[in-house]
Image 1: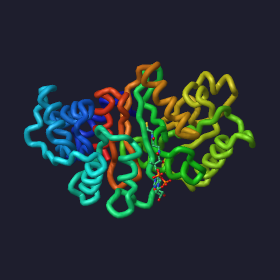
Image 2: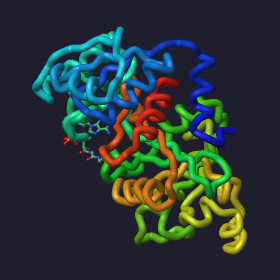
Image 3: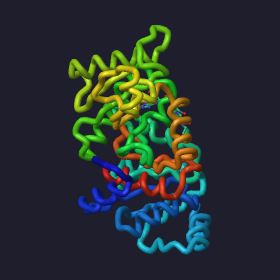
Image 4: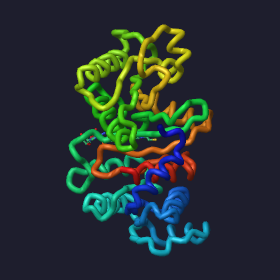
Length: 298
Ligand code: COD
């Protein structure tokens, strides 16, 4: 069982395969710092696509050594995204990473029908947290891509996350489908979806995981709370993956964990033909580095 995000590093070191990472709009000091650390750790080969003078200025200011990396000069952000996405599409790169560009701009490139990274599956965001007050790593999805997922989308989101967690060696992740309460309330769509997902899992329509829901946040992550409420569940108090009702709840939880609980995080977009590192400006260099590790595992 993973207890810390540094365990990802050990997992990758075992694989010994260097991944090519295309950084779109590379003139971003935070992203460059994380990419530099992963380059120096021998995890990736960087391809830096963006304004070359601006990228080189940051590299010089920060004293980074990108000797051996590939530079592609493209000063226009949208074209830079297109070049980076195309490189992954054409198998010239294994990981796509967002630099100094707005998330929707990158995602629109990823979803391009001709040269994007669609696979026919839903794309979704997967975040893995190390929180001091929880006994193991806990994943949260979807906090950044699907705005208001319906039941079908939620099945796709669970399948993406479970598939990745299985790859990480977590054979049957425990999935808590969150609602405001742990009972089904016919006026609360999240609780209806949760009950359906649980039943689909029991009937083996969603495999390789154990799903329970609806669960409220407290009983999903605390045995004590679950016991207090009399909830009998294999998942309650021992959740590996929290499925969020929508992007607002998910994004607020993500930022609450980072800002108030000082949690460490790694995140990646799944369901595309390659993992995508899509960290936000507010993420620390450490989070960005962890996200590269998580993507390199895929
Ligand atoms: N997976 C696969 N295909 C998708 C997905 C998805 N998650 N989302 C849209 N598509 C496909 C649709 O089927 C369609 O063919 C095409 O893409 C366009 O669909 P639209 O018109 O619904 O999508 P867009 O282009 O308007 O928006 C897609 C975004 C991902 C940009 C949008 O959903 C979005 O802005 N999400 C939130 C991003 C964000 O701001 N996150 C905050 C991070 S901090």
